[in-house]
Length: 148
Image: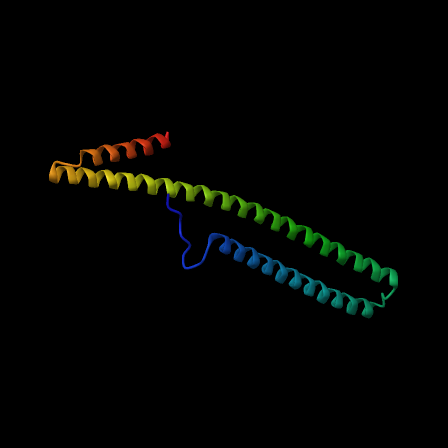
């Protein structure tokens, strides 16, 4: 059985790790963007409140509580998205492993067919190689029996 060789040192595991890092960086950028947006809105609200004269501590605390609730909600949503994406990645890894096994089976079948074709050609050309034909027939029979 042959194993699939990585392409110039790049392995599927390294690709998945790179994808995880990219996703994490995207989440960090989104989180920072949302925090900056919330801070900007809070500054605008404070300026409006100062213009209205609402500078009581109770009013400010209620506004801060609302903002913290918004941040908490955003973080929960982000975590659920990350978990969903992680489940998808795990499913893709399982599918990749299954497909790799299927490719190996197909390679073995093609190899057995090529050997039998070569043995048959040699037999047709020279009239010899009966034993090689029997071995090739056995290989194909073994391969077909694993498919069922």
